[in-house]
Structure formats: C-alpha cells, structure tokens
Length: 421
Ligand SMILES: [Zn+2]
Image (tube, rainbow, N blue to C red):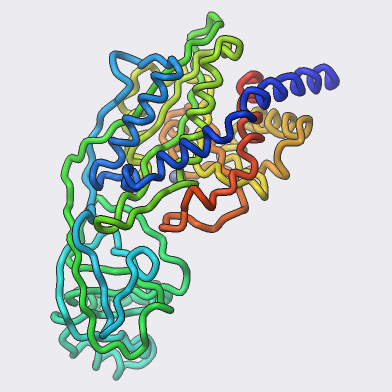
C-alpha cells in the first residue's frame, strides 16, 4: 500500500512539476504585475484593488474558468481611511522619508502644522510630580512624542492619554520596524509612527502635512471562478487567497505586498491554470476565490460566508493561501488540530515527496480568510510559508526580494493533497 502510494505520488508530482517548472517566470510576472505602481498597493487608494481584481478576472477568463453566476465579481462595501494626497514630516531641519522613516497611523486624521515638540517624560509613570507637571502642560498646539514601548503603561493612565490626544499631532516612536495596517475609522488627530533612529533627540519643532479621507461605503469585490469537476458529487473544494493589500502612503509611496499576498494570488492563478487543463481536470469542482478587503478585517471573506453564492454545506474542504513567498523553514497549517486526518495526509505526502523541511501544526486562528468559513463549520486549512524574509506590512515587501524558496513544492503539495481529499 505504502509503495503504491509512493508511486502514485511520485507520478503526480512529476506531472505537476513538469507542467509547472517551465513557468516560474510566469509566477514572477504575476508578482511584478500585482506589485506594480499601477496597482497602488491594491487598496481602496486610487482604486488599486479594483485594478487588481480586473487583472485576476482576466487571468481567470484566459484560463477558461467560469463565473459562478453571471459575473466573476461579488460586490460588497466597507468604510476605509485612505491617504492619497499630501504627506510629509519634518523635524527641525530633517525631512523624514515616507515609508522608511515614518508612516501615518491608519486611524490618522488629516492636518498640517509647524508646531513645538513635546516629549513625554517617562517619569510620569513613576513620579507624582512629573505626572502633575505633564498634566499641567498645554498640548493643544504641539506635537506630542512618546515611545511605543510605554504604550501598555499609557493605557492604564487615561489622564495622560487624554492629554496626549489633545495634541495637534501625535508621534509614536518605534524601535522595531514600522508595521502598517488599515482602519475603518478616523481619529481626532494626525498621528504618525516614526522609526526612533530617524527622529533626532532634542527635536524642537515638527512640521507635518497629511491628507486623509475616510471613504464611506467604498465598493470592493471578491473575484470568483470555477473549474468543473469530472465526478458526480456536487461537493466543491475552495482554493482562496486575498488579493488586497495596504494601499498607499500619499501619492507615490505604496505597499507592494509581494509576500502578502501577491504570492498567494500567484499560487491561486497557477492552480487555476493547472486545473483548467484537460489532463488535470479535478474530480471535485474547484471554486477559486480571490478575496478583497482582507487586510482591514477579513471583510470580503466574511461577506461571502454571510451571502454565500452556493450553500456552504457543499464545501468539502477549503485551502486558503496567504504568505507563500518563502518556505526556507517550511510552512504552517492553521486548523491542523481541527482536522488531524487531513493534516496527517499532508505529512504523509511531504514525507514521501520530500517537499518542505517541516509542516508545522497550528490550532484555529483568526488570521486570514479561512476564519469565517471555519466559524460556519466549513473544514478549512490556511497555509503560510516560514523563514526567508522579515518584510511584512511595510514598503520592503517587494517582488524582487521575494525568494519563492519552496513555491514549486507547495504547489505540488496542494495538487497532491487535492487528489487525496
Ligand atoms: Zn495577508
């Protein structure tokens, strides 16, 4: 039995790799397109996500995928705070570099000013006089600056936090890298996250400019295409990846999102192409879903689970792909503990075909688009690769530095796994 399985797997992977290995340049081309300036970081900013959705739709069409109803798009709306206009930050005479030295916090309001700097004295947490002195200061027309490592202490002291929030501008200093995110709300201040090493000690004045717009009911879409299976069962397999990312910081600087998640979308497109070839026709129908608005809180995938285009009960298994551009240290399977039988299948395939250095097991987590499906009882795995680069939610997540270390191996793992589900 074991020998037969090994033989079967070896044939399967040979076929998959043969088809695939000629086309790593195509994967690179997908990445370059999805991460290009014309996609503006695939957010609501400059409708970059819509451009990405149109690209995915046209690739689905080229591969011969069918729309699930009349259209490949499932539309939905959400609110999002966007920075599409002016952005600048200057300390005394030093002009900081957007994206590298600083980013606007996702909840930031627009504003501008040339204001005095007020550093939060950390003695406020330990000394009553220091606290009194800080609370007696006027912060209204100032830039208030604090170190993020004191944030946990700050939230325990609402009176200090309130005083900071009266500031015209808030500057949070970070030792570690600057990590961006998205918000559905807008705060009352202009708010920047700044690399501590880029912010001179003893800064006297801060000059800033920021245009922020809270887009209400911004229209987005999931892109859905299917490859019909050869079997009689009406159960389907879902392969999904979110195509959106964090958009822009002003007009020019954008978050390319190569690993997160142009890598997963490229895998999705490769799998769609593979399964639409006659010789690779799957037994079960495969529904390919490219979700929008993941980065702001899994909105696109949640919308699908609340407005499904077919009964969720029909889903035999879901494989969600997010962050597949590395693999030096293997990959992780979220929900492995919920589905031990399927997880063991992955281990067996990996052992036989020697694909990845490790396939790590993880329990449920609300960290990507499988989550709301899992919550509704759909059996689902989420795969992400490990090791390689540390770029994440920053301007360094670029296609030219994405190693794709185990991309082919993950492709083989998925195609072999789908055969065995
Ligand atoms: Zn992601």
